[in-house]
Length: 208
Image (tube, rainbow, N blue to C red; front, side):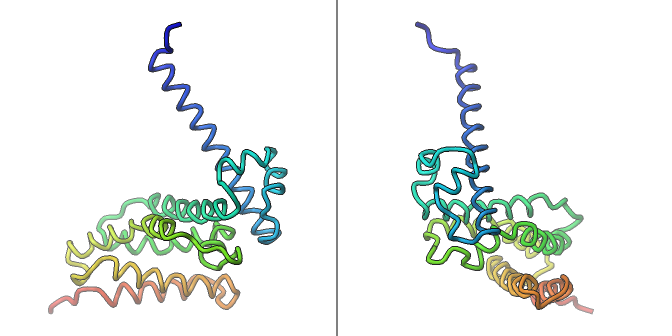
């Protein structure tokens, strides 16, 4: 029996991988929706399997256990945020691009409440991301570092480690979003004010 042509075999493998990725995405969506609507107690393999229309064996094979599922949800949340930021249309210069990323980050946080609660509010009691997961999560936001580095190279921001500015900006953004989600802020004006203030702290002073 002759082996399948490489092109045909490759197409089959690609289709198999696409089916796997689609099922994985569907299981994560089911899990995060259960977490948001019914709380962490609902995140059982049996409940997720019933909601997704598959067997528990599939879920155990894909994620290992409940801890593995929680870590997969954690990383998926950051991946979705990365895609949100990467989709911001390019601006005329890096400083305008940096200012455009702020509203996009807030929009991502508010658009994904289930993932946000897991990523930043310990929605699953006892879950602690591994160091590898934390490293991958922060890497998902590296677009901030890259744009800030471009701002420094272009002379808009003072020379320093881009990560230093990115982390300050991230911290300010998270504080405002947490207050907004808790109902203490009515809109995004405070978010805009604090993120703009952080950027202004690092602007190069123009000589008269």
